[in-house]
Amino acid sequence: MNQNAEKLDTCQLEQMLNGVNRSQVNPIVEELFRDFAERRTALSDAIENQEYETCRIQAHSLKALSQTFGFEGLTQLARKLEEASQARDGEDIVQIASGIFDLMGSSKEALRAYLEEKYSDNK
Image 1 (cartoon, rainbow, N blue to C red):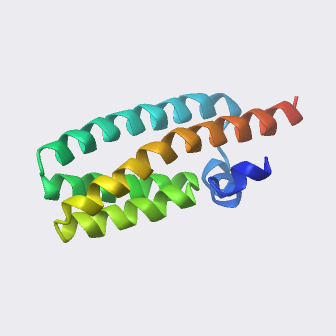
Image 2 (cartoon, rainbow, N blue to C red):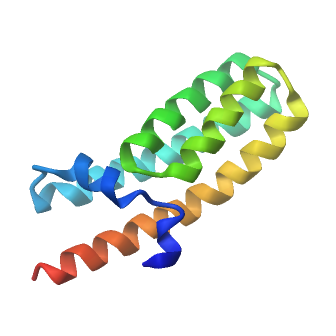
């Protein structure tokens, strides 16, 4: 789980999951993953069409969502993307978004691994 530590703030995640019934965790996580996919598509389209305000809005939403689930690296990149979008810096937007898309995948895997380990210990 050490390699996941850089992608996932487990203290933040535990705080978010505090009081959540184990049976509710999978639906929450699946909704998160659907949200990631939708934001990725919306962000890709906005970048392609140079819709900087849409990029900023998507980055802001992704920043909040990532912070809620403890994805520190993703939160930081989303913040940078929000700033680049506000500055209308197309080159930085493309570069940062590429990093976000990569980190979305590895963050999802880190969350899956963490939850699998967490709930296998409680059986």
